Image (tube, rainbow, N blue to C red; front, side, top):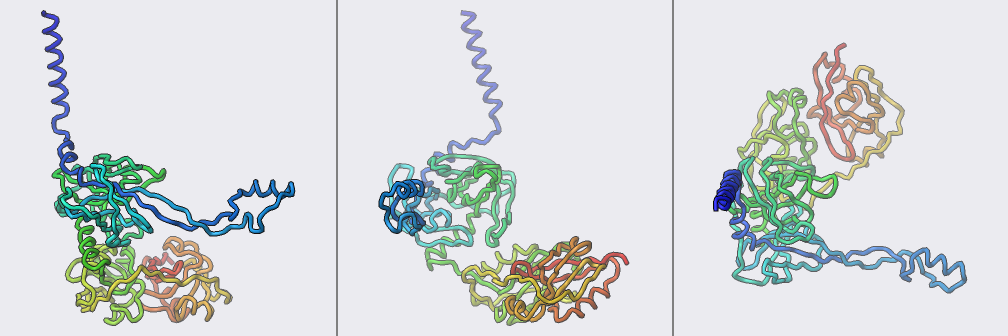
Length: 468
């Protein structure tokens, strides 16, 4: 009897120790039970054209037939276009009891057929209401009612370090739950100008795309969209689209079938410490204008290359990535105020916003100059050539100097062979003499912002004068 009593006491002691060890740790069970039913699995079917032999014979079989004199079709082995069906998997979540579903645009891109599977195993064919590639958000609709739906949370209350839960279908494994913390907010990713991503360390893998990211209150605060990976799998860096951005896009898609965004017609870059100093700014902030679309909204109100946009509609532009978000959130055709920094003076302008169409790119290409070298400045490490008329026409500029060699100070500034210098500060470059004069006037440790074209893109770099 005594031994049994001792064993019982030992078991109670272990349970107490285990309970004490788990106190304070998050419990996701209730969240998953209540919200998991609104998460769906999305599969798509796409048709792509590929090239292949019309006979269906592989090259080795064809070669064997020819060697032994067997008849071979005339077009055997020739590459002919044919159709191939591909499938992909993703996730989504129900935002309306009548069957509206949010997912990623890339999950349903080019899909001929979209199938939605609910947690209760019911399967529906889905209609694509609309998608927006700039934010990677798509809205689907299935013919059903009385469906479970998620609760939309407030991203503004989200804090770095708090627990979050991702539910989705990684590698096709439906309703998989992973957890982590918010690693950062407002994260800017390369080539992503319209989304201030939420970064988490919740395990997200292929197939999780389009699934919800929940806070501990069971509210959706993001759509899992991207991962950073060198292997194709999870590496601790996951990125979600804030739900307020996604819902705004969803409402636009539902009402208009597309998203209307404003534009001002400029290309911009960040202002670093060197650029701020060279333009006379006290601190590095704002968006530096490195090209202005001819006839665009900005051009019409006199905005020039070299201007630094400090505010849009009264809101500070801390970095260049802030400006596209602020502008695109405004309504096309409305008036807006822009505060700029030019020649060390603040100017306030009123601008009528245009509408953003499909993403555009400057198509100008660099060409090697055919004129002999016209300048070799040892002090700055620059060897330059004037562009020929045909090269100027290709680039769409009136004058430019191509860098044939860069070393020393020029290399430290980031200048490279093949860059085309087209401006000095806010002024367009009109002659070699203009550049020589500005360079000669620089005193030791003074700086000069140069506007260049690189791979068709406009960019400002700062050239710092060395000690003589």
